[in-house]
Length: 119
Image (cartoon, rainbow, N blue to C red; front, side):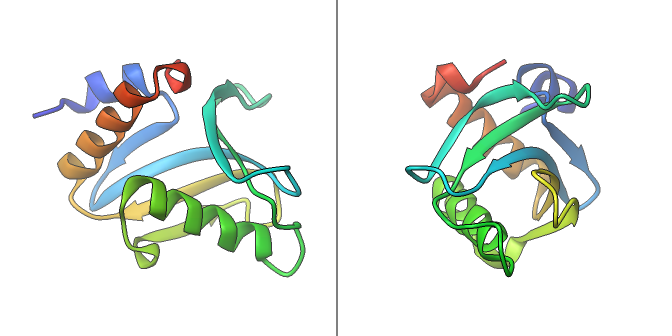
């Protein structure tokens, strides 16, 4: 079992909440490739997960690509994701609905497999 504190110390952009997980993201649209990068300073005092997508930031295409990429990366249904802040901004907050402990464990395993992403 992963404690909320341990997970947030290792993965600052991730915050366990009732019924799911909040993820602070900085989105880079029109990138050369779709990729989940490392944890970076978002320029607003928050650690954010940097995600690059090839889709343009028009008509919600980049947001849809963001959700599709994270759902595939973390093996979660796209319907579990919701953009709760910043839908028209590069700085976004996502809410992933689900069992908090399972989501935190998934994030922890992903960070262990991608050490360059860890803060």
